[in-house]
Amino acid sequence: MIANLQQEKGIFWILPIALALNLIMGIQGWTSIGLAFTGFYILQVIHKMGHKIPIIDLMTTLASLQWIVGPYIDYHNGSSHYKYYMYVPEEQYMAFAVPAIIAFRLGTLFFKDHSNLEDIGQRVINLLNNYPKLPYVFIIAGLIIPYLNAFIPAGLRFVFFLLSNVKYVGVIYLLFSDKPNRWPIFMIVMAITALGSIASGMFHDLLLWAMLTFTFVARELKLSYSSKMVIALIGMFLAITIQSVKHEYRDIIHKGYGGNKVSLFLGLAADNWSSGRIVTPSSEDDMNARLNQGWIISAVMKHIPEYEPYAGGSTIIEGIEAALLPRFLAPNKKKAGGRENFMKYTGLPLGENTSMGISLAGEGYANYGVYGGIFFMFCWGLFIGWFWQKLSNWSFFYPTLLIWSPILFLQVIKAETEFVVVLNHLIKASVLVFGLLWFIKRQWGIRI
Figure 1: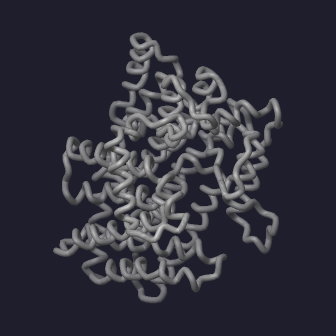
Figure 2 (figure 1 turned 120 degrees about the vertical axis):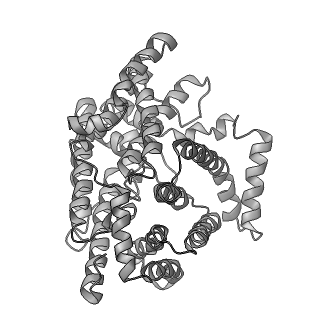
């Protein structure tokens, strides 16, 4: 672990910077540590892009932004959303949330990251030398599968949703090649993803795959740190734009809008920027309310154990059962969605068609309290670090396995989801991916 800490270049600057924030700017102790920690991992993710597959760093950064930076802004911006506000004092909240995120990252550092893109790139090149048409097969299959959705039983739609993501694996394979059409195909696939997101009003896939594929793009373009920083800032502005208009946009299209949805979306975005609503939103449409997932954790902290006793690990056991057992063996197993846990452990109502997760940190607190919740996050970090190392080890059997890792972590990487969702996704996606790679090897002799 010490060796892994030393490889996190600059990590030992976190405490001096936190101390400066505390002494010079008067920022509360745990908050200053959390802000310094967040800043470090933002820079760390940018640094690793093009060299590693920084999925764990992305997990850490997204959680830090949503559990530390968002709450900090809410505590100090002078206005609060009518519902999405912090329910406990800053000192109480940060004394749990900051150690929880740090504990998660420390847990992951017990295992070394072997996702060197140069090594992976050579494996992909060796694969494509023997099977040059393989990327095109995956891309075409991934583009066709969504159109079969109407004919697929509801119970299998999650499987086919995962399979549709093989188009991104195909595109990444292609990026490692010297094919002259690799960049046009990459742009076409991402454009189709963007158009699909606009058509449905759901932008998670676009944002997640844009982040997850960027490391491969940065490697191929040999981007400098400053170039990656500029692109990261552009990406941040695009994400802010999407977040600022998506609720209004969804309201319009769900009412039966029959016009050009791309024009509608771009018009709303332009209107939000020109009117200044993105920079200075109203309290009812507070941009930070979308960044800040800490308000849910704080609601759990206020509600538990005063109005509801600690769960004592029951939701964790339910999550493991839901991930490992098929429904015919456990007919009453927990369903994903988060609605039940949210209302029970925050004490807040939700609309009939609304689902919210209490997040891993919130679930850790709901089950075990402050110190037990921090330890739970450490254990989750251990598991994620172990799993990531195992993927590297299993690359001996499937040389390009790590290229498939974004599919495994699509839900895991998000900070707002709870235990049953992330574990269920990780296990089922792993079974599907390994099953697919095994089938391809057995049927056609291709060691992917």
